[in-house]
Image 1 (cartoon, rainbow, N blue to C red):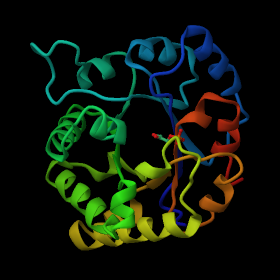
Image 2 (tube, rainbow, N blue to C red; image 1 turned 135 degrees about the horizontal axis):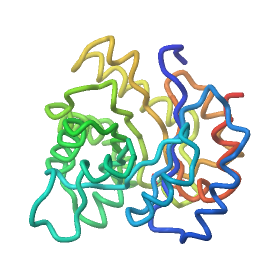
Image 3 (cartoon, rainbow, N blue to C red; image 1 turned 180 degrees about the vertical axis):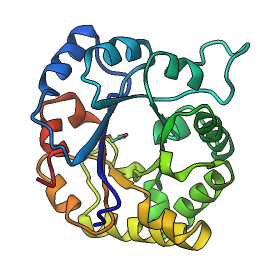
Length: 248
Ligand SMILES: O=C(CO)COP(=O)(O)O
């Protein structure tokens, strides 16, 4: 645990919610929320403006994806410039569902991260191994390769949060144990030390995602290298407030 790294909890609503549902989330997000936690919610693109206008300013709003250029003939895509224009400051990139359902490559994700940072957004960059990769003892190799692909396009580490989300733990109810998650987080921090520098390693938030709930968040939050969470299902429920306050 480092004083340099403010605890960060992101919600990822995925493709869920409607205006009434968002109103319900906004009302439980009144908290009280720990002042020691930075909070952002990732909402569907079509509700970014509504959510930004209705949530208090101290809660960040993130898009769940964006394209790698500012504008043009890319039907169906949105750009970081558009996200910023709506008053939102964050984007989630490289989520496992983007990688595995929509076949986004390491290269495309890296280019998206690069452009989002250039455009002035903050980025939650997601990485994580699949079950067969973990079972084949390839976790380290896979997450290091994902980090390596991101590296050339990261111009400003102070605006990047790394989300380690093992694919086998997402939406399955199978949370990584605090030991399993801490082990990967410590390796990722060492990777940053070896491949970027010590300052970036010490100051970059590495958050955990995958079936985080009020029941398991406190144990995970006590480990040395888990600097917060990216929360899917539980971020749609009042449970999210307990996760935001996990370290209090
Ligand atoms: O994918 C996730 C957050 O981005 C995690 O989802 P769950 O918390 O629903 O497992």
